Length: 557
Image (cartoon, rainbow, N blue to C red; front, side):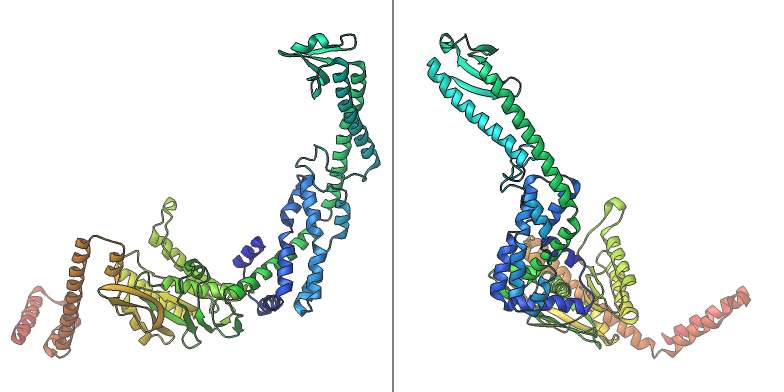
């Protein structure tokens, strides 16, 4: 299920019918609580069928893998029954998609209950499956019982309580007697086989005869058992396409069960869809951030984009939640288009064809690309590939260059998206000058993430409200980062002087502009310069003209 969910997140559906079919399944699982609990329990006992299929296909599956496959397939009839008995239309319909794979189950009956990891160790094939194998096992087992009896008998005959019969692959079976008890050994029957530092090893004609029988039976048993195992594995290989299809269907069911659990636990709602391009998310939340906050309260926010106003310019201080707000809108749409419920009080969404994001700072120094270059490349890709049915998220465009360069690029992008693409767009910025664009761009709407000052400290409210932000609170954020007070104090003084200088500069420009508009003499001089053909004038004529113009300006002064 986790791989299926990842696949769906990477490739959400773009057709309404498919999305709503998934929604109906989730809805029925929410209402059918006991069915959901039973399914969850059964699905937990199903092993990873995709990986098992892969091992079988490559011929690397062990006896334990085949036992896990059998155990998983044995749960399928119960899963089908739970779905079929639920009485819910979509669940009953889904049950028909599940393949019991009965032929595979029959083949796997040959595998023992708890086979070892290696198929060559024996114990993989169950008793009673093959007569010849059972005969070999009987001979081997009885031979070992006979050896245990022989050990007891030899201890009684010799009186050596520490006497033991052992086995190794090089010397086979042997009777071991310690050096201290060698004088008690019956050398008339015992034939020396191996000398050790503290013991002697012997063999008797009787033991030699049984050894041949036991080892032959054991060797033949292991050989035949592995041969039978490979035959079964190869037969199962023919059913891999069916097993893979079953795995895919079960993984879908696993995801649907998870969707319904999450929807119930975290108060997700079923989103509705519209054929227009309007987004209406009421009291939306970021599902990941909300979960990480634990007991803290997450501040929900609305996001409303209409056909008339489908661009949102977001301002507000750093750390106030602009990026989180943008991400939660995108996540809500992705969740909706994979068939999940969404974290909101209500949601009415369009079917989005693509989501493009330009969020966060990154570079690619190996390729010689700066942070700003990466930002521009990502922006270029989004703008050239987006359609009117796309969603664009741009966070702080233009920060990697000079203020005026960045502001000019940001404004130009907003205007281009507004005039040429028409996609739903969330655009956050610290350039407050851009908030004036709502006067010239009909579809642009200003919003800000609220913050307030209390006793000289900034308090982030994390609430998105209409209108532009009044200030950036950058120095307040620096204070939260514990920058030295000397730096913060100097920054406040500089900010104050910058703001006053800006006002004076604006005032000075306005005064010049005011007088220039009424200065007819200056306009006449400028017009004369513009009209004169310098190439056709002699040096003396040029000097004369310059003298006249200077006189006119001096007279004005």
